[in-house]
Image (cartoon, rainbow, N blue to C red; front, side):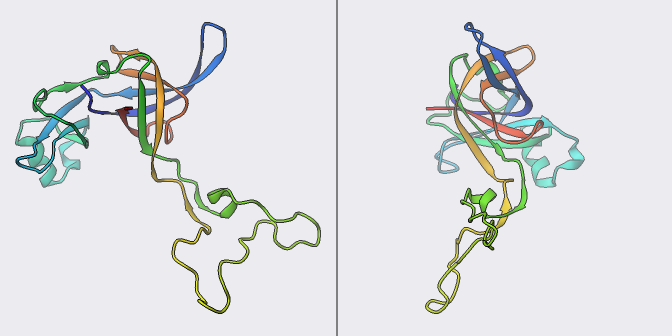
Length: 207
């Protein structure tokens, strides 16, 4: 199977390789997920598989979401996500998708929401350099000029300035899978993944 799977970040730790070197790793609880919908080119215009993860109380879902899941007699999932595929012939609604579809040594892309850092300045948000730190300087962390004073006499849209930092969907690409626990639905990948512990993640096989 080549589709992705949903999970949650548990946290980070370290493991030691055969040479005794410490390797930082992230532990992810992956699935199990169910196939909730199969989209075909004839009906929807493209081929995709929708999966559901994390069962919730039906009261937390809208009538549209309940109707979508009850149509196929599926549990009430709090997370739904679809993945494009070349062919849907090997998938069926209600099919179980688990961490066993991945292999140790495989590379994956992990997508999730980054940690929110609030309203930050230019240096932290855009990695700008600071101004002179001498006693006479009055431009230590100030943004400096943001545009011409006459023509055009305005600030162009998209100018890099202070503002909301983080809390955006981001992807960490090509993380190596170092361990898989099919009994506890766990995956260990080298390096860090987006967000804090408990963050929702989408794990996709890297091409």
